[in-house]
Every structure is written in C-alpha cells, then in structure tokens.
Image (cartoon, rainbow over all chains, first blue to last red; front, side, top):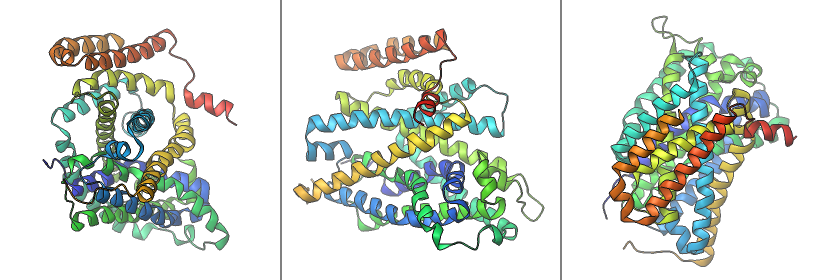
Length: 366
Length: 62
C-alpha cells in the first residue's frame, strides 16, 4: 500500500493546529473557571490525553490500514457508520465555521481592525484552495517544517519572560480549588482531542506501523500538555488571572510586555502570525476531513471540486453561527467544546470499547 | 459576494463537467451543496441582520 503520510507528520500537524486555540482560548477559559489556580488544569488534562492517545494507538494497531469510517463499518455496520459520519460532517462544518470566525476576529483584534471579514475569508478560501491543489502531503510537510521553529520561538519568549513572572499571581494555591482545576481541564482536553485526526488519515499511513512511530503520538500528546501548561503559566504569571479572565486574547496582551534583551520587541506580531498559520493549517485539514466525510457518505471518488460549494456554505454559515467576539466566546464555551468532547473522546472510546468486547480485530496486516 | 460565488460555481461546473458526469452522484452532491450554499446566501442578502445561532442560544438557553 502506498504510504502517503507518516505518523510523525500527523503528530506535527496535531500540535500545529492546536497552537492557535491554546493561545487564544485556553488561558481565558481556565482563568474564568478555575481562577488563579487554573494553570494547574493542563496537568490534569494529561490523564485524559493519555487515555485518548492509548485509544487511538489501540485502534491503529487493531485495524492497520483502516480509517475511522472503515473501522466503524467493521464494528457497527455500514448504515450506522454512515449515520455517524453524517453527524461528524455536521460537527466538522461547525468546527470549520468557528475556526474561520476565530481567524477573522484575531485579524480584526490585532493587525487590521477596520477591514471587513469578507476580505479575510476570500483570501483564506483562495489560500486553502491552492494549498489543497498541491495535495494533503504539502499541508502536512508545511506543518512539519514550521512547527520546530515555532516551538523554538516560544522557548526564547519563555526565557525572556522568566524575569517578569510574578510569583504572587501563581501561589499560594489552595487544595479547595482542586475540583475547579479538574473541571476546567475540559478546556484543554477539547483541544487536545484533535489527536483523533490520526484515525481519519489512518488509511494514508503504512500498514505496518512500528512501535517507534506509535511513540511519536505519545510524544505529541506529552508535548501538547507541556506546551499548554507553559503558555497558561506564562499568561497567569505575567498578566494575573483577573486580567486573563477578562481579555479576549490574553496571551497577546502578555507578550506585549516581553523584550529580547531590549533588542527585539513586538513579539505580539509573531504570535498573531503563528495563530494565523495555525488557523490556516486547521482550516485546510478540516476541509480535507469534510471532503473525506462526503466521499465516505456518498461513495464518491476523489472530488476536490467540492471545495467551491463548500466555501460558499462556510462563508455564509460564519454569519449565521456567530459574528461578534461575545457570540463566538459563548459558542465556543457552550457548544463547540461540548461537541468536541463527544466527537473526539466519546465516539473513539466507544469504538475502542466495542472493539474490545467483540474482539473483531485484524491481527495481521493485509 | 453571491455573484462571485455564482460565477465560480458555474465555472467549476463547466470545467469539471466530464468528471461530474462520470458518476451521477458526483453531480448530485455538487448541485446539492451549491443549492444549500446559495440558499444561505440569498437569505443573508434578503436580511443581513438575522440574529446568529449563538445569539439565539444565549437568549433562550439561560
């Protein structure tokens, strides 16, 4: 079987598409729900992430060369699998709409406050279309190439910010806040659940996945938890939980106060750029997933031309679903996060459970 | 915007005509998605100030 992408590339992509949500939504939501001890929540989320990564690896190992749809057909039958894919399609449409809105709001909040969102969306649609014309391998390679430099940049920023962290913003933490920090870990888990993209692209991987490759997924999950912890610690330690809770993009405000030995400042522009790149990659991947769902649902052949009517639908859906920052925050916190829990956690867990109970696994690669 | 989208959809339809006709369901899915997109666009053109879904949920789910 032709190996189109590797598990390493999927891990890089998973981390890359998660960056923008971690920077934009996580610090604010944790500050709102868990107060000053919210920076401990990413550590709790590590437990859920370990469980989900274990489930993904188990499914990849039990069904080599099969994607999530084929696994569902194998376990639940064709009709039920198609029905679940239809629901996944609706969720993906909501997710891509939310992502496009977040992309527009980031640009309007930071670099171009007077520009209308239509322009951003048209430019984005053109960029996504040209990226998809080159194939998914190009998008995965782009994330592979960019992620390492982004992580190095964050490491430099963190070193520069160490002197500015106020420890009285972080400690003392009371044991009574523990339940709040556990509950708030939900905000991290819903982003970390992006790791399920590995199941969607499992048919593009090698049939025989080595243990070293599977270890990459564990490493990816660990990097995600550590990265989120550092970002939240950084934001809480410099801006304080009260300011973090009341600002739409607290990390952006936080990095404004950082400079690299008074030589290089304005890190916030780089942060905006990273968010935009991450959103762009996420929108590309979501588009590919929507097209794959349509292919599975209607038994189509490879059909990139569906991008055009999809772009029309997503363009207008952004106005119907949420248009202002307040509406987006409400939508993200109450709808998108809960749906992410269902589609990124509950369904893969259910599949793993059914697989264990029915023991319908494919033991050898074919 | 809807006119630009209209031209793009028709251009793609003409350009991919052979591929779309290879399987009837390709054409049906393409047309179905286009109709949904344009229906959303026309409603938006008629009333661009319709309350959004999250506004509706925020108002009624408290």
